Image (tube, rainbow, N blue to C red; front, side, top):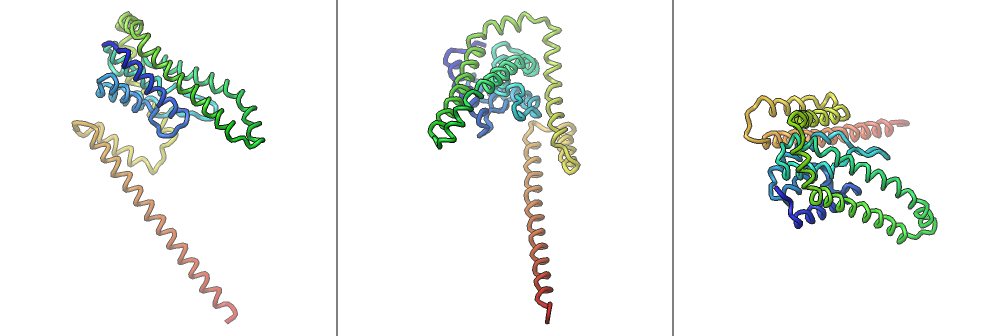
Length: 269
């Protein structure tokens, strides 16, 4: 399948928007699942975008920025994973393995910008000392513009301009390497989810993990909607349980205060 010029421009525009959201972390549409879905919508194959995005999302689930460090870029991974699966016809698992170099490219470019933007800090300090809010706003808008446009340029070059070399490269790969990429693509989501569990897993969450594992692995389901509904049920149980516990704590504190005041009023009588 070929990507047209109009589709390439739409992918660039989409990358500008989600890349800016990644910089601001405002609406979290930069996650691979969202980026792959948008890419599939633009390319006319939403189902493929969802399949690729779900795999990449699991693989990137435990990768989050911390301080000055940057994980492999989720925007480029979601975009190029779907583009590679669409243009070369490879499986979503193989696309996950093939998209990683583009994800690393996005990571290195963003790291370069974050280092280069440090030169703006001296000017920003001067604006802050003088109370020049317009100057600080101008610096913020400039850096956001540079980041977002760079995402658009990278997306257009990788998805549209370089699509023929990518197709030739994938066709040139031996079957053993393609199969290895599929195997690696099948393992990476488990690794990513395991990294997430290592950080978030607590004893009180074990029942949720067991229930989800049971639903996904041992119960015949036409799709993942029952798992999502079960997750919604657990979320509601936790929400109302926390609300009830909060009310009980407040009532206990109020009773303690009332008992304490009654005791003080008896003093000296």
